[in-house]
Length: 484
Image 1 (tube, rainbow, N blue to C red):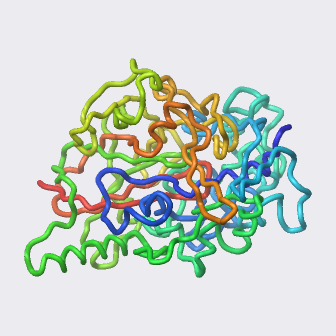
Image 2: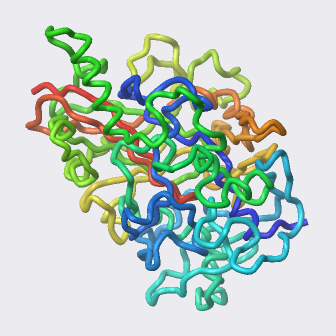
Image 3: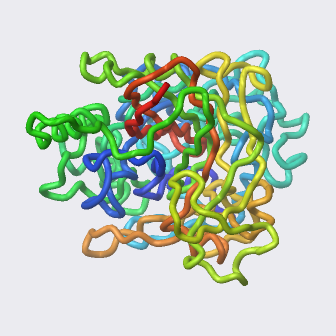
């Protein structure tokens, strides 16, 4: 039985752990311990949509009930820049609410809400109603199986009806649709997505989102409450965590010289490797940026500071890396891989490194990114076909898009959080290929970036991931020392 797009879209945000900066490594205050797989996967901004202001953050929102009254028009115009190009909804989706499974049509709507999240704060994009289309909108951006070519919609489906547009493009106002244009609560993330007044709100969002999630009618944000004694506590900003780490280093040095970080120094004007990991594959794209550490000390470290120094990507190759011990040769197409030391971390252990061609997005091939003149890179791992991307599924037959990684047998959604009858969160894999499943817990996507000329001293590196499938932006920071 075909599952309603409204219901499916309301539960796709079913992963508590989403993504993290791998290298350069962040401070201990931002990593390790406590919350599912570790704090490093919980630094993000909840309720972020393109063209909205920071005052809209912290809420659950979706295309049917956006984060703000007037989100901007998308600036991405090329379907190949999108991660979710096949939104076929023929496959049933499991939700995380105590193992509940939806295989049939949604329940009848309740006045004031759709079949899932409450209007205005649903945890994932919901189809069914949305703002009227704006004149000049490219009707060929998004499609569903059976309606024209993959990634497009046919002429008779032009978006001229309120609701039709959201049904075809349920993620249309999410951050990746206009890279850099969605607000963040902090350029280094917020632990748990926002500063809520109750730990209950960290499970699935504010209001009645918790009850909807536990009854199987909505998706989670972090899936479980932050544990007692976790330090720093949920709601802490990433910049505050960075400052805590540096102050601790100063105090421990007891008057002696000390380093602000444990990463290898960078040379101005050279190329360096950086890396990240996606735990729950919401698609979208990433960028790396720098801001002088002094701004942390005087309280002026904000998104504007990082947008003044985006790093250029170097070359036309990215790499998917994993430890050779994680996977059998039979699982990965070995003709696509080669062994080397870890490109970003400089690890001496044996690493399999699979090169692939990145998709770059800039002002030259879109209607504009932020910062102007900068370049973003699409996440290279494809999710599964279907509106859920494989979230909560037990199989993943075909990818959303193809590249060298799919040729090597690597694609899928990643991890999904299942809530047990006791209310505990259990991290499980979702729809993934056999090869991807083997390396889910520890892999890296590596890019090469250019260190700007003429800079010197300590800088904060911010990794920003603009999600396509959810109204969320991940940002996480580390400190690097740049030498002349």
